[in-house]
Amino acid sequence: MARQTAPPAPAPEIFLDWEIFASALEGLSALEREVVWMSVLNPAADADKMLHLDEKTVAATMGKAQELLRGRSDRWSADMLAQNRPLLAKTAAALAPKDCPEPKQFLRLLDGQITWRGRLEVEHHMTLCWRCVDQMCRFREVSALARLSSPLSDSAAEPYWTALGLRTAAPPLWKRLFGMR
Ligand SMILES: [Zn+2]
Image (cartoon, rainbow, N blue to C red; front, side):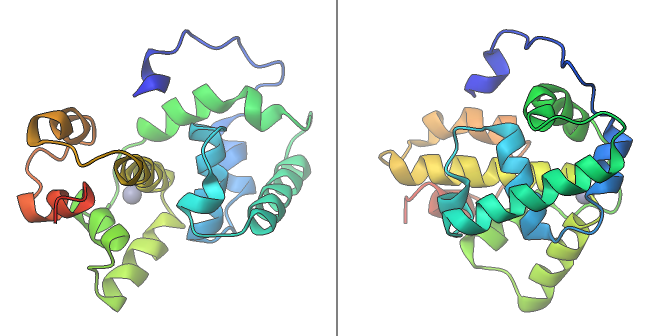
């Protein structure tokens, strides 16, 4: 994916410590976390469309997150989150898994093929685990990309599955994700 090959970003003017980030946003719901995380992963992404929210809700959620960060930080600036994007993304992806759901649970959630209880469990877990918020957002990106492009062949889809650690995903599930119903 493009962001993985991008040149290294300049060091942030104000360093946002991961502990501060995580503790400031502790009270956010799974969906609110996804809004914040989408902006961290890919500021150009249409977070509202990917999350099926309106633009106002996304803007309000970002405002809320900024206020929470401001309340926890000694030094704060409006673009502090933006400056720390690469660092935050790297840190979340490197967090140790702790009782994390199977990746296919995220796919099922996206696909609407999850039980009500399963959905609650995944969403609850995401309020405790930024690693999984990160995973879910990456799945949403791939899924949105797949909807925009023509269906991918098995070989074209392979790099995505490798990147997502999903080589073993059951074919029917990922074929559905890539529109090969
Ligand atoms: Zn997790």
